[in-house]
Image 1: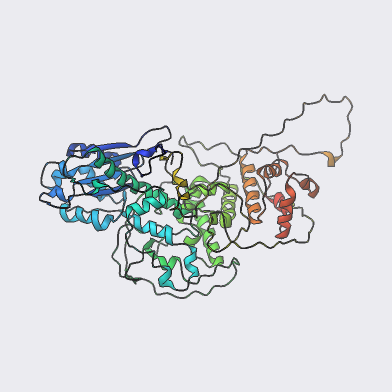
Image 2: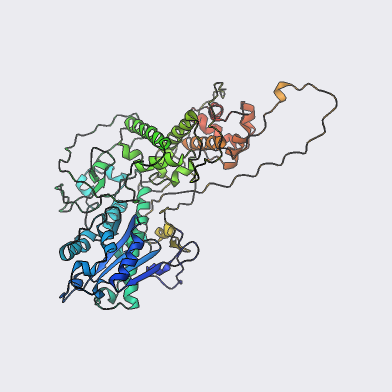
Length: 597
C-alpha cells in the first residue's frame, strides 16, 4: 500500500481518514441520498475485484421497506460510497436499489468482504428485497486461519483440540482491526443511532470506517496468509451449509481446493495430524486413508482475490512454462510426500510463468511464494524458468504492451568442461535448533542460519498508513510474530574505473597464454542476473553469509581456477560452507557462468 497514515500523535482510533495515497491524496467519500446518485456512485465500483461491504438498519419500528436496510457501505482502496437507502423514495426494490448497485451486490466476480456478511447483511437483502447476493467473503474465517492455523497444528496429537479455533465462528470487527490494523475501532453512540434520517458527520465517519476497515483487513490478513509456512489456500467464498463433522459444536472452515477433482478441502486435510516434520525428504511417512467428503459444493468464484484463474488470453509461452513449473512442483511433492498446494499454489506458478522470474529475491514479490517456498524450492523453480528460456531461446522479459520484448540476450548455454575444487575435509558445526514457539519469518528447517533482514508484509495495495505503515502495525501488543519478508534488491556496486590505455609498443612481444585474461562480464545482462541468482540460492542453501559484493565479483570475473576463485574478497566463508555440504563451488560456477563472447 502507498496511502500513509497522517494522524496526530494523540489520536488512537482506527479511521479511514488516516490513510493517504502515494501523492498525499485522501480517500474519497461519496454520500448518496437519491437513487440517481446511487446509480452514479455504484458504477465506480463495478470494475473492482474486491470491496469492503457493510450495512446499517433501524433496530426498532421498521414500518417501511427501506427501514430493514437503511444504509449500504461499499469501500475500495481509494474511495468509499454510502448508499442511504433510507432516504430513497419508493416502496419496492426497483424504487430503492439502483441498477448498478444491484449488479454489484449480485455479481459473482466482485468479492464482498465483511464480518457476518452472510448471516446478517446478505440475509436481509435476500429476505426483504428479494436480491440474490453472491461472492461473499467472511473475514472471520480468514482471521481464524491466519491467527490459529499453522504448521504447529500437525504436531499436536489431539485433532479436535488443535482445530477448535479454526472454525466458522464469527469474530467481531473491532477485534480483527485491533489485531491486524494496529488500532482499536471506535464503537460509540453512532452504532445505535437512527439510520433512517440524514446522516451527520459522525455517523458518516463511523459507517465509512467500518466498510474501509473490511477492505483493508482482507488485504492485510491475506498478506499474512501468504507469509505462513506452508501457505494455506483461502477460505471458500460464501457460507456453504455442508454436513461436516463439528468440533465443540462449531463448523471447521473450508479452504479452496487447487485440485481440479475437488471443490474444497477441510482445514484438517491441509494440516493432517502427526505429519512428519523431519527435513529428510526421502523419509517415508505413513499416511492414514481418510474418508473423503461425498457432498459436493461449488464455491463462488471471485476475481483478483487469490482465486486460481486459468491462463486464458495469455501468450502460449507463459502457458507452456506454467505447465513445466507445475510438473516440477508435482515432482517435488512426490519426493517430499506432500500435496502440490503445500509446495506452491497455482496462481503463484502462473505469475512466475507470466513474469519469467529468474532471480531468487524476486520470487518473494510473487503472491503465494513465502519465505519457506523461496528458500526451499525457489532454486528449483527458477532453474525451470532459466532452462525453458534457454531451450526455447525466449527473451528474459515478457513482451511489453507495445508488443516489443525487452532487450536481452539468449540465456547462456551450459559449458561441458567443469573443473573441480580440490577435496576438503568437511568441518561441520552443530547448529542449535530454534526454541519452541519461535515463528520468525526467516526461520526454516532447511536453512539453519538465516540472514538478518527487515521484514515487511506486502498487501499489493498502494494506500497505507503513513509513518507507521500497514505492514508494521503488528509490533503492538496485538501483534503476531510470523511475517513475510520481501526484500529490495541491493544497489549494484559501481564497477571499478578502468585504467587509461597505454600506447602500444612498436616491438611485438610474445605473451604467455596463461597471462591472457578475459574481460570482466557486465553485471546488468540477463545472463549475469540469472548467474547471480543461482549463486545467491546456493549461498542460502549452504547457510553462508555471502555479501552482495562477493557475488558480483564472482559474476564479473567468472573464475576458472581455484587460485582465481580464492582471490575474490569474502569468498572463504562461501568455500568453507560449500565444502561442509560436500558441494563443489568452482564446478557450479563453471556450470552456471554465461559463455564469454
